[in-house]
Image (tube, rainbow, N blue to C red; front, side):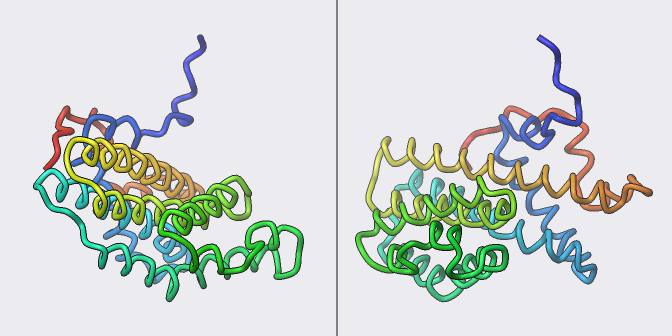
Length: 229
């Protein structure tokens, strides 16, 4: 088999494959550097897309640690996430979708066939599934890939909180580990996408890209420290 061209290999996946600690470190460091540069509109746009994905990874990692410590998440945690969706997330998602596909168009109706009802009515599971469906469709639509990542990150976060609320023991740990891996992959994809965007922005001065990442970690393989903290 022909080896893939090195620029087609996501380095963040490689260095975090055996280390969630490094995933957290790289993510938090990148976020801090985006915050520092957000006076630039291009950097502010990257920050807007990246923060929810990092928040989801941090939240899922925390939920896993809670389950491992015998902590059972309360209904309040899930309810607060639904409230965040209703008060903040839905408006943002709709705004991004309707920017490209105005209300009344076929695509807008496909994405929100029942408007906000699936996200605000029904069981927890039905509402969480509605978030996932919307995220998957957006992620598969070129103009909506960024908001798709945002939605899927939030889905991972709220699904993790729901699992922690419902379960104890080995099954809960396995479920949370699976969700954390999903969150890690989303984080790495967003980091890789941001690196590509920054490479284009600084194509006449490529070394400036390094100002937004912990390059020392990117230059070495991830350590085998995937233990749960």
